[in-house]
Length: 337
Image (cartoon, rainbow, N blue to C red; front, top):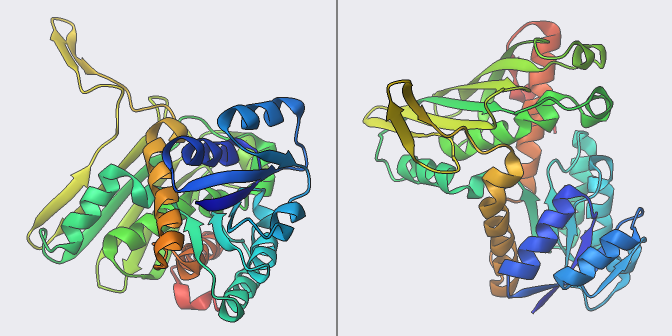
């Protein structure tokens, strides 16, 4: 039984508590930490099966019975807590991104060199059944050599301007998932990125210094060309699609819906809208990524996404920001490590 400590009892921390307590029998949440722990959250955790709660995450790091730490706190704490947990000899699952600062990610890499514990980054979409099927088709050669990769990722509603100011911007907050997905589907890293973007959804996002609509073109190391289109607001729901076109065919996936029913009558032909947001769409993926992390600990195998998988999407995000600011294609190699 892997004993787990979870740092952060917000939305994503609760997702992982629920996943482990209900669907990962090889693990147990011993301690849940959050500086803003309330009686309500503490009672919820107890009802889920969490052994204890605390306001001080360092209690998790100091507990010799805890094998693994899940870092679900605010983004600006991820790298520092990662280093502390690694140095404490804990296996680490860190929600994306590790950090927005390359030097701070390097600190995590250096810590792992000295303390070779398991480290997994939380890019949950790789574990979605739809994207897994497309990647498997590409990797097995069913569509030949990949030529064009298209990813559509649109949120159902924009974040508030206050969140935008601390998020790192759309490329490091939202598109970072799509940068990881491009690498996953292409089977290689990106070489160059070019961005066209604007503020078409909410002027407050622009006033906060960000964009809310973008088309991003990437050149990949294997020669394929990738296109990502993002919007902070799709009125019909959470729009998550991908397509890989290759020399011998194409693999594509659409949105998950509440049902596959299609109604045809005199008024027209209608179907369900996409599931509303990421919790509905990706709950199965969150469970699977956690099972993979625990399996890596139990069986002493590599995690499916290591620290380098956390680094590359951040480099891509920083290159995208630079492209937008300087109105030019940017080589990923310009974002030095």
